[in-house]
Amino acid sequence: MELGLPDIVALLAIGRADLLVDRVVRCEPGLVIETRKAISGQEPCFLRLPLESPGYTYPEPLLLESFTQSAGLLWACTSDRADSPQVAGVRGVTFHRPVRPGCVLRTVAKLVPGTAATMFFCGRTSLVDGPLVMTVDNLVLTVRPPGAVLRAHE
Image (cartoon, rainbow, N blue to C red; front, side, top):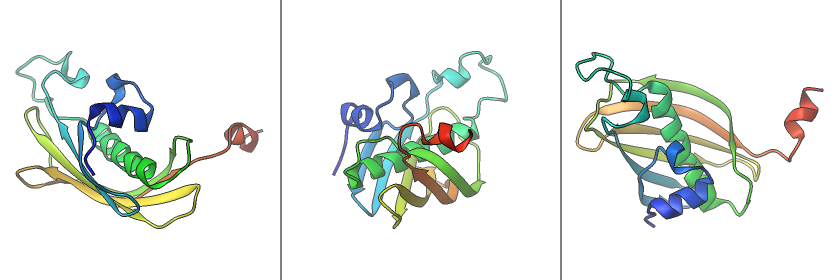
C-alpha cells in the first residue's frame, strides 16, 4: 500500500511543519514499511546557516525522528488503536554518514511482535541511490492511558 501526504498527516496526527516523512512507498501492516524523505536546503534546520557553512548536514536527531515517524505509520496501519504512540526507548542507533541537502532518504522499518500497547521496531535509513545512513536496532513505541505518566511520577 502507498500513502500520500494527506494520509500521512492524518495517520500521524501531527502538523505538516513537524512532518519528516514525505511518502510511503510500501506498507505491509504488521511487517514492514518503506518511506521516503527528501532533504531540502529549505529545511528549518538550515535556514539560519550561511550557504557556505560546513554545518550543512541534516541533524542526526531529525534522522532518528524521521525513522520514528515511519515506525509510527506502520503502527497506525497495523493497530486498531486510536491513540498515538510515544517513544518509550531506543537502543543501538548508529549514524554511518552525514546527509546533505539534495539527498533523498529511504527508510525501512520492520515490526518485531509486541503487545497491543507496545511495539518494537528495527531498521535502517539509506540514500535512495546509495549508501547506508543510519541503523536502528530497537525502537520501542507505546501508548499509555491518559494520565498514566502523571500518576507514575506522583
